[in-house]
Picture 1 (cartoon, one colour):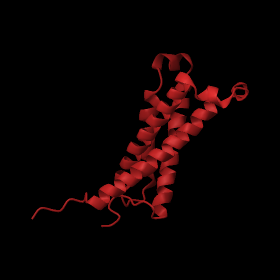
Picture 2: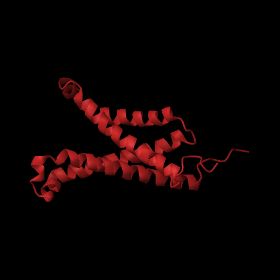
Picture 3: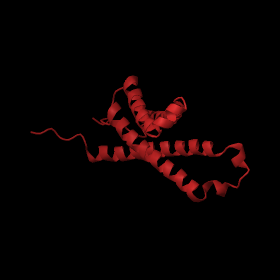
Picture 4: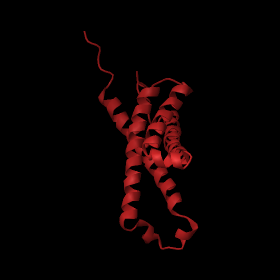
Length: 154
């Protein structure tokens, strides 16, 4: 007799909840980081609507949407990778893998080399904040049993 699939409707629903939580966490963190980039002392003198107007506002929203989607995919992968394992190296490995892929993909290599690799460090640092923060939020939600890692009911 074939073994029943572990991907029950309850597990699928839990995956959707984890993806939403990861997307919201990463999206909000990205919005905060992007707003920090935009709100310099010279920008504070401008009306708030000028920061959100035109192409600048669309770019901001698109960046937040991309971060939210990345956070959702991260959360799903994190949920399945850690399962019931309490291995810190595995958890950190998932965070680092997503950090490097997102951070390094955002940077133009020629420009980064000319600027002594600082753009790589900045992009990877921001990605580490996004995914590390999402992992902390997910671990907190798992500990509170608001969310469940994969296989928690087995």
